[in-house]
Image (cartoon, rainbow, N blue to C red; front, side, top):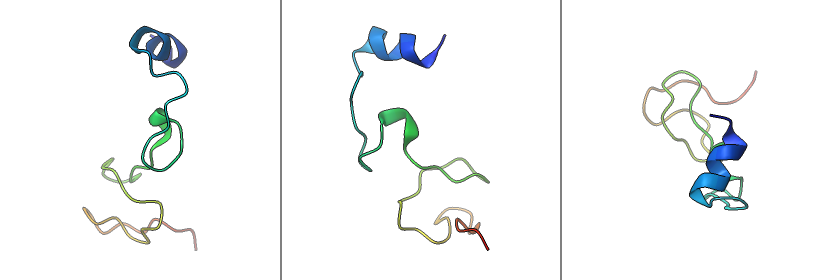
Length: 53
């Protein structure tokens, strides 16, 4: 089901998550998929670097 359909179905259109980003855009670690804070430099779960370079 497309994301837009889910938003309409569940009434989350325009909802902002804790980061101020849309609810489906909250940051997650690319390695383990667990949620991270926007200001994290490394993932608190798996230790992967969250910054380029």
